[in-house]
Length: 154
Ligand code: CTP
Ligand code: ZN
Image (cartoon, rainbow, N blue to C red):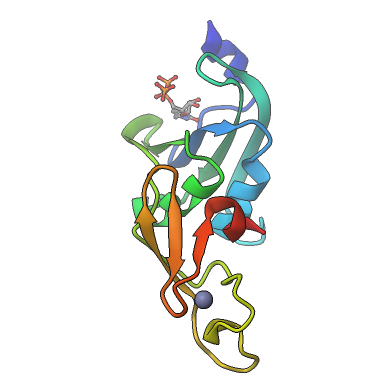
């Protein structure tokens, strides 16, 4: 039934399927994961397909790469509903939900212009700690500035 609809993109043999991404967020998910398409993995992007739970959803399939929970949890910023499926030999070997990471290193910029992480030529990697889970709130490890998910994405 619904599986037929999903055959808009075929099943993968080995790799990762990120399912139940809110509609329209798949490109952001790839951006956060640092997947540009130049790494050589086969990547399928499905946008705005029907979902029982979400109305519409996006799906990302990455063939040949198993993402770890640590890598993938960062996408909870833009896709809190996402389900991660690790595929081995065509079967779903593991399935887990994303959850906000306790710590985020180096991926986003602190919004405080005078934070040491924003001083030109100062090679300090931004680090954020999760200070509240629901809704997620992060604090810069250097200046303490609070950032909601939306702030980090800017
Ligand atoms: N999938 C895939 N290749 C496979 C196996 C599964 O691309 N070899 C995809 C499915 O199309 C689906 C996701 O991985 O998008 C999860 O598969 P499955 O657990 O079989 O689907 P559901 O039971 O619908 O998942 P959920 O309960 O998480 O909605
Ligand atoms: Zn800061």
